Length: 112
Image (cartoon, rainbow, N blue to C red):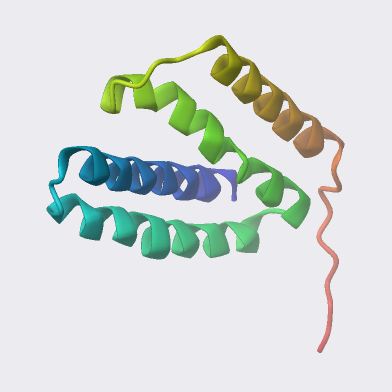
């Protein structure tokens, strides 16, 4: 489940960065790929992740998309990695870990 969510968040990050790249450079061909990654690939893997892991873990891991953006944007978009961005990413990462460790890991079987 977590691996599927990692793929989802990385696809979402890649899509958002392609949209930003298209906006900065005016290369409109990147809009379509960015939208496909963000609006199609990311949700497909996200929904699949819920099949294999508890919601308390997957929902918290979705916050990692911000961390991926902060870590990758300096290399992919040339954006500055400021102190505030580092601190914000560290807080999100710590919160994600805390929720993942302390959240319920049990699945409850529900009937219709």
